Image (cartoon, rainbow, N blue to C red; front, side, top):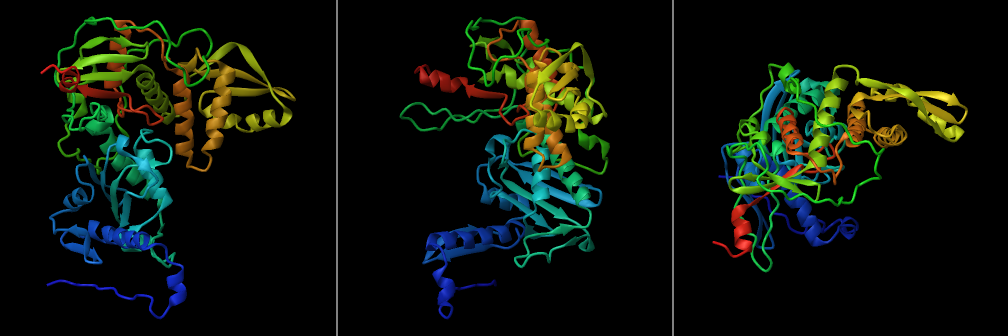
Length: 469
């Protein structure tokens, strides 16, 4: 038994509407997308769509939403989060940050089983990924909310795809915390998988990389692969003084979810606790081009971008201070004066409270001048005038987002100023200190701007390239 829906000559008596339809393939794609939206939350029902005698979509009956989602996104490793917070039940099944795509077309969001599109819900997912997503990119997968029927209104648009929540802040916090816990604990947030590296004129059937093995830590690098030249910098060099080395990682705060005992998070299929085999246990081989740190992870050669890694460590420390109420500051012995036009000076001074909250103290020093009197302590070696310009830009560019998103972007900008640059030669002790700091934080696999910190290439692939079996 079942339901068959057959559509023929849909617009036979409305030719004007038919005239404005797009190409047959485009309209067929819209129909297929509507079927996917229905099928994801109804795994106990089988769906099949045919067009002109050809099967377009076919989904067999499954036992769970997760199984159905694996049919929609075959071969994808999905992280799973499930929990209840502030009366909002959240189920999320999402792909890794490096699999994120431009736009939210592959992110399906539901409220009580109904497909919806809500910008605040998408922002909550983005914030939950802790800066590991690039701008405008979203993971593929599903986020389904279950709320009391009277706590939302679905009748705000004829298509019934928009929703209004009676307590949108509670929904935002529930999604960001439940999903954030999963992302922080899932193996791909700690160590991204390697990109495929097919040999020339060969197929890309590269062995699937695995998470860290329990390789023993070595005290000194076995080889020296350092280079004295600098890789191109993404921005002009700051003041000549080098950023301070990595401080020993002190006690770290629990992930945001730890404050909410109702919340639970489940690891991805096949994933395990990322802290079980930390970065610091990787045998260090050496440094390449003054930029990449090389490690032997038994089956794989691991590359770590030193700037991206230190940037994530610095960002997490700044964010911890910010969450505790105040970023630690360091007063300058002599205030640095910055000459500006009158309009520019007024614009910056209007942001003084926001900048003060982020650790940068700015005061008027004349009709067309401002004085920088204090900078974040973690950024003591950064050029204050350049730091001010970049922080103002970061705050202005993200004013359309929530206060938390705007502050996070500003903190990411600050972390970039305080982090070691590409081209700086590190000692073995500095490398090991960086690895220990990475072990102490969540989201260590990506910098706060969404770039992967590391990637791996199987030794078997390297042996194949040089025809060594």
